[in-house]
Length: 269
Image 1 (cartoon, rainbow, N blue to C red):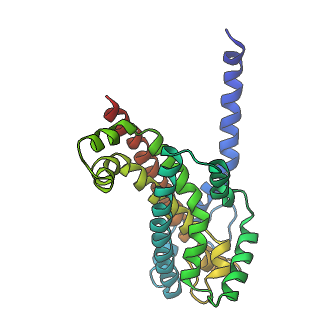
Image 2 (image 1 turned 90 degrees about the horizontal axis):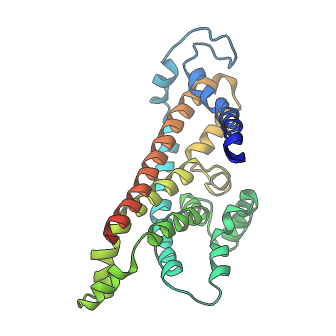
Image 3 (image 1 turned 135 degrees about the horizontal axis):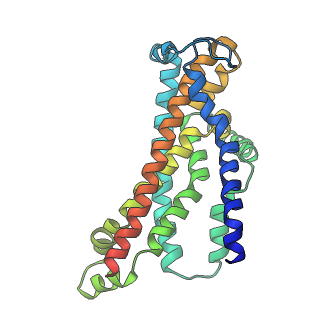
């Protein structure tokens, strides 16, 4: 038995404890969202669905939900479009300063979001852009672009470039090759990028708080509600729905990411 084999039971236990520590507080949100009382504490006094039923009558909530869908949808499209061309350039070409360029694209992942938000707010005010959903889209595109580039780079790395070269040899143009050969193979990666960037934008709070102005997104609306104890049960119900929605999107994104690898592997055969 190797040393690694002897360590495996301990490593599995560590991973299990880590996951419990990380996700147990999150799993308590759906549990308390069914609580009949307004106090978030054990024991639960009873089970009810009334907090979910009240969500549909909240006009401010529905407006903020619509704002979040607008912002997240636009952000997903813009960041995936930019990430698609950037990823292809990084995988297919070698140029001076490429590593610096890739590091600059990934910089938002390590930059404190509150610093980015305050800097963007100052910049937008200087150039005459008032806080609005448009400025939130710009901020979220900057924030989600690294996710799009990372996902689409993986898709292009799995793609055999000889397929494009064969299309060129047969007389196909560059746009035609991209549309007929490249795009169908990397399409699942594009869908995965859209789903991940949509999820990140939909859940993001700090940039939206600074840049949304008088049209708050859903996370900003939730923040405004948790200050009032009587509103907490509705917030928990809403949070449970968002949690399930985010998990579903991430599962779909992983499915399409793996589908990209399978399509690329089949194309190489």
